[in-house]
Picture (cartoon, rainbow, N blue to C red):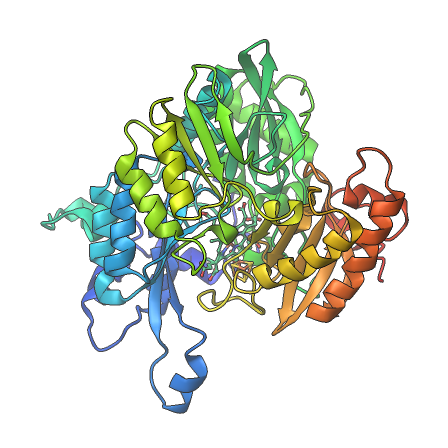
Amino acid sequence: MADTSDKKPLSRNESIKEASRGLRGGIAEGLTEVITGQLDEDDTQLTKFHGIYQQDDRDLRPERGRKKMEKAFSFMARVRIPGGQMTPAQWLALDDIAEERANGTLRVTTRQAIQFHGIIKSNLRPAINSINKALLDTLAACGDVNRNVMCAVNPYETAKHATALKLADDISAHLSPRTTAYHEIWVDDEKVVDASREAGEEDEPIYGKTYLPRKFKITVAVPPQNDVDVYAHDLSFVAVVEGQDIVGWDVLVGGGMGMTHGETDTFPRTADVLGFCTPEQAVDVAEKVVLVQRDYGDRSVRKHARLKYTIETHGIDWFRREVETRLGYKLGPVHVPQFTARGDRYGWVKGDDGAWHVTLFIESGRIKDWPDKRLQTGMREIARMLDGGVIILTPNQNLTIANISEAQKPALEALLAEHNMAIGADSGLRRNAMACVALPTCGLALAESERYMPELLTALEGELAKAGLTEDDIVIRMTGCPNGCARPYLAEIALVGRGPGTYNLYLGGSFEGERLNKLYAQDVGHDAIVGALGPLFQEYAEGRQHGEHFSDFAIRRGHIAATTAGNAFHADVVLA
Ligand code: SRM
Ligand code: SF4
């Protein structure tokens, strides 16, 4: 690894990792401590590597504060599911865990995982144990490691998509941490005491003792669909197709969304092109990219530790040389990915082999029974009925039910109708909407997101209807803070939380997802957002060119400047 002796002091997380004995820390002991609902602060950094975040119910903070009570602590657990592929039996198992151990709901995330919220400490080990019994796990779903590998939906539709999933699975397995701490703490029914394990001496050949400087995210895409949002991640593989075959992968590096309000040295960034690799080289390339980031990522300032900043600091040509030196061969020239869309393809599709697949709209990914639609009950009954089918979590918080036989299709259609489960959404805007979790569970939220987005969409649908744009696809995303969990800076319209009820409004991200948006209006509330967008929708309806997307129109008319990448995000801001 690189010599860090002449550098700034390491961040606190580095010493926590170093001293953790292979990510054990005091987690096991903390779980048995009954006088408090929380874990030791350092251990809450380590539980992230196990897919677990300590949170508290922020709705209850004021009341509990007044009564001088401990915060209402609970845990979020994220199940790592490469490519979002689940069997119906696994769906049923997770649904049971949600009922028995969490807050009763399941949350499909923006990265094809499932989150449980509201798990109290005494339920944490049983919950994680049950997840493992369902042959799923939460290891490395969070933390300074490679996270869940995302993959284009759907592997049952074409051979190309199946090849993409195989790569996602292979990368996921190759980059999984090797520590046995996870099994020891959460899975083993009888704890086996082994001196070397207790000492945390397992070999982590890829990560080493202190893992990565920061989280690391990988996607695999099959054009023309950019459903995984390749420009938003640390590393992406984009299929290069000849005929029906994938002949290799264009490799992109250094994308990322997170930033902090007012700190212009933090910024969202679109990924750069690294080069082309053959199918046989892809896992090796993933490993070597991770190794360069392990050795050169900033371990002093966590806000500057993602791969995007390593590449901004050293340049893409330096980064390519470092990767190629470790590979021992050169990457080929890229083919430049050609994407035409990002959203999920709602509705029924027949695959190459004659099987059926259906994609359902799930508002903000929350699976629960709503007054007007019984999503959770419906999915439970569908999972019980499916014979050979597969449930796929999409990168846009929706669900695809795949591999359905002709004979089963009518029964599935009947269940969807019975539970009022929507195949599409009421408007093109809602179809292309995402909102992060935010309040009440997210400790970093400055404003509402998931709970507010439906109300805002309804108001905006009124404006769209007036302009005759109800069916037009427009990408809108909302987050409760600038960290960017719903990838807002790549949306045509984005709202990023600033404080209770106020947001920054961004415009101009491209429909296909390769251009960042820019700040259009600062600190706006509901009425100002609707008031700003209504007239723009009207102008767009009247003045757009054939096939022109909303964001391209907004740039052409000078409402917002175009942004490409990196620091340019903060430059040339055009305010309303
Ligand atoms: Fe995220 C932190 C939720 C996708 C960038 N994210 C968090 C935490 C864990 C808050 C915390 O650190 O205490 C949130 C938990 C909220 C809750 O109550 O559940 C959280 N992130 C989510 C999810 C659940 C949003 C959703 O509505 O689906 C997504 C889970 C994905 C998964 O299954 O793994 C989620 N987060 C993302 C994405 C989108 C993506 O990766 O495609 C991003 C932007 C891409 C990127 O990483 O640059 C993202 N989350 C962040 C950041 C900023 C990271 C940075 O580089 O600055 C944080 C804060 C941090 O890490 O310090 C964060
Ligand atoms: Fe929380 Fe911010 Fe992520 Fe939303 S974007 S889930 S508020 S960290």
